Length: 393
Image (tube, rainbow, N blue to C red; front, side):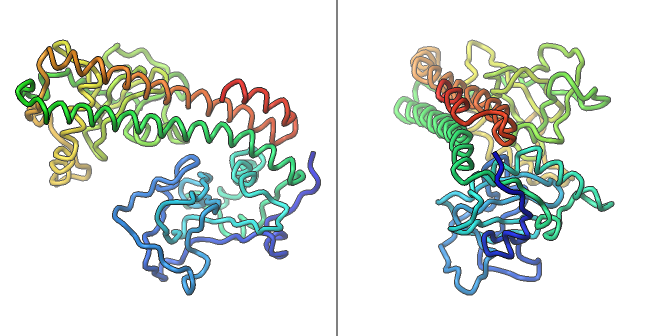
């Protein structure tokens, strides 16, 4: 399958690949800076806010984002990789990132390179290099250029990329479906309140659901069993730092698909849990509907208070902002039984559709991760992988 093995430095010297680190701290650009925390598993979720105009790259040098760049995190959390999307703001790369740009005549397919960074071949080399320092994990630019990659033909690279890319593309579609459905649900709820205010009444948020706080389940974790859900798992999903614990916990401290979780400390957020059964850690409320309410309604009500709660948390003179249980007694507008029934007929199916899309993406990601090592090693033929993917997409 493989035609040759090359170092990145060889491709760089032959002008077939551009590899660079982010801009030095001493250099400033009139652009927002992309950081390690903004590079998630396969996508960019920038933390900076606001509108940034497109700026000509002339004079800014190469360390400014371009569509199609492959981005690798190389300090702290090493090995997260993403592709620069064709849309979105332009930004400068931080020193903790490394970018890759194959040339038009390069023997290296850009998307194949993206998937290679997820392979055992990359990780075997990276693990040996990043641990050479006593400080945080780090890959220097020279380390990156010393990496060796086995190159199949461009046709085979494209075939591997197309198979795995079809799964990632479907996952991206599902993310858009879930986001759009949730926006539609919020719009339906808001419109009902505006058009029929007499069918809504003020109640304390604490009267609509039981807010069950998690516990410190990461202590003495066994390393296997169920995931312990912390705020980072709600925001970004499981990672290398995720804790697993094989312990028995009460039902009230378990998160199952469709449950509403509300992180009340740190980065306050509310989310629908869609992953397998997990254990809820401290600083997270499991929101269990009461008095005939529905999970989608609790989600809407907490979402409507979240900005207010974040403002309260920001004023806390502590190391980590948070709200207190008394803040759950703040008033919210709750529909009466007749209106709730009408809204449930519209929003409940949407809630289920979004959950279905999120869970399907988990299955697609698991399939992608199972196919990737077999395709990258040549143990699975592309045509056979295509048949497997066709049945799923």
